[in-house]
Image (cartoon, rainbow, N blue to C red; front, side, top):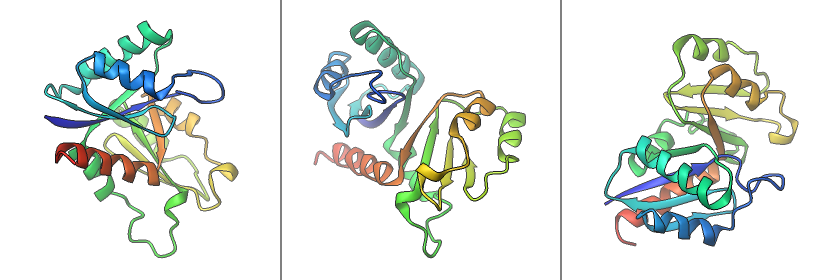
Length: 185
């Protein structure tokens, strides 16, 4: 069994895409995704699966949500190993004075085309700093999220790939939950 982290886009945000977390866990269990556990109210689910074909799982989860709740969020999946690599690649990890509360990781549903990636990386993001690694975008907001000049909607539109962001504390917590599930804890 492999631990999978599911990140849903636009769930319980601004009064839209409302799903109770107990109902979401029940849905995942009904899809034969074992030991589903949620984290906060924004559509984070960690579960065990024997079939780690992530594209097929994302499609199955999205269809299940649409059938049960009447809307279809983007579903982005990462294995525990992939999430561990996301944490290890954090380009701001060793920076003195960097506040982890000001770091956002956007998880992309796919890999952006090279020209789209280059165009987005060329954006003037100051004072925010943006790094892109494979299917993740790390953005450090030195003045906090509420005072950001960089629009993540513009970044995502430029990449032409759906994504969903999580703050650094959530990323670490989801990895911890996945590791515990894999070790039976």
